[in-house]
Image (tube, rainbow, N blue to C red; front, side, top):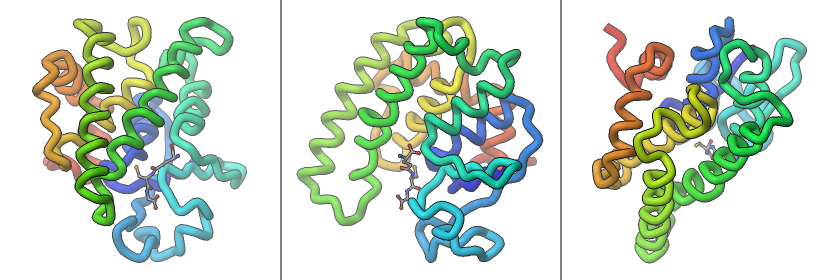
Length: 205
Ligand SMILES: N[C@@H](CCC(=O)N[C@@H](CS)C(=O)NCC(=O)O)C(=O)O
């Protein structure tokens, strides 16, 4: 398997899941700000015509896209790691509820803040939306260790990833102590540390 990623982008979540799951895998970075080539010089649009990360190329050559699908695909391969609740259980739907919320209500509310073409009014409105969404998550999380059940799941990998973007757009998650504490705790997981090092987001020494 091979994951195409951009350092610190939403592809960090499946990268963490690959590490948490103990997979043998390859990875390659994409230059999203430049000419969208892979670090080995290939045209990324030939691998994923959607042009965005995360993109997972399976051992049989199939290309899987969309973070929530990739994360569930990976987690279902290693059920003993409990990165997802079993298919068909109520907890699985709770997990999917969180994945949809993080994807559409949180992740995509950050997008204008990274977009140089977005107007100040749009950015302000996005900040206000994020404030409401993060307040909701902090209330739901309270002092719980994880979003769903008693285990680290792919929803935590995704939420951790998106919370990390606050630092790049002037959104201090310290306003929500539950989120700050949660983020610091997930940050310390060995698989998360290994992934952050692999993406060059923290020093590897
Ligand atoms: N719907 C996609 C969105 C992925 C996405 O937003 N990827 C961003 C990085 S976080 C990206 O590659 N943006 C570059 C682009 O859209 O051109 C998913 O959930 O996987």
